[in-house]
Image: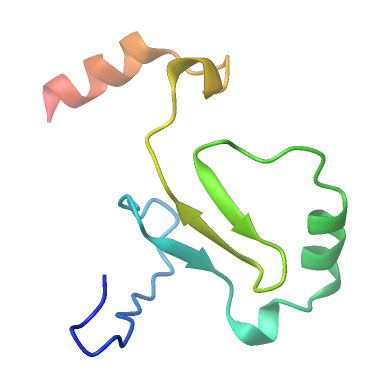
Length: 88
């Protein structure tokens, strides 16, 4: 989200289950961006998800669209998800 004058609204979260919204930008803290394990992981990435745009220079991702069913992990059991949320 942005303000009228162009300033970015930055949301910080340390909650692993935080739900991102379309257009949200996901990034690491500046001091974490050059951590050896982060650099190694980014260098070893072979493919990127189509519903997330990644900026290599800024080391940040933008959630641009909902994923297609074919892009989801095969290990996801949709029936269990529906069952879980029907109880809530």
